[in-house]
Length: 343
Image 1 (spheres, rainbow, N blue to C red):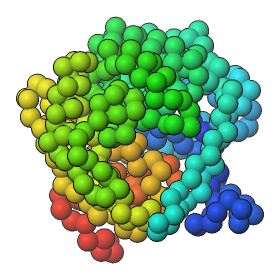
Image 2 (cartoon, rainbow, N blue to C red):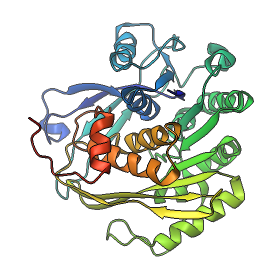
Image 3 (spheres, helix red, strand yellow):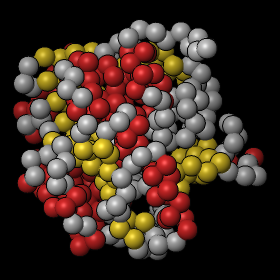
């Protein structure tokens, strides 16, 4: 199995029970999660050697976050200890036409104040096959952006394939700042993952005649900007999830990919997901599933189909982590989405 390293922030997630609004809630459900941590859990769950790198406070809450990763087989030996706090995010889960709402409380978290000296990247990337980060980590702080670039440089020095999920978060930084920082980081990236908003806000590429809120997807527009992104940054693959939000409880879900090596564009099967149990972490489960397909040795089309199926299933599971098995993903990708009871 492959060794995949991910690096970012793991947070304490406090979500309202059911579909309650914040003002109704008298208690919160506790989970742990975060973009790159979610990817690591997916890959460990599929049997790969997944390692997550971060910094957490040396207190019981930091220990709980690490334990949540260890529970699902993620390697945590290079997690640094220190700093003042673990980041928190609050989640109010929407329903029907009411969207979900995320509120961050992550300023000055341990990873936001971490320094390059906290990590031995040569040791971390020894024997690694793949490194994954997201646009969330550089957005957390300037120090985290510097840390991300140092990790990318070390990964490339070790011959490691690098992927990035662009993941624009408007509550963390502006599009102008994102484009400045992320355009620089793209020089290290082999596989670029995102959606139409990410490509626009983070890199300045917008597919024409596409409106996901109305269900209008112009695949030719995606192919065009994918080729432009390859021309500018030299990516091997550009990948986009395609979410058609009919409501907070009802989404269409598919993805597309462009292989620069094959000069070929491919659109996956589309899934209708309703009702959605929890869509947070859906993009991370897509990235984790697609990476799994690649490191398994699948061709780019089959890797994409595995990722889309994995993510469709994640929408049925509460919490950030995707806990479906490889067999469940392969069953869905193979065409069985009946949901019949297994006896």
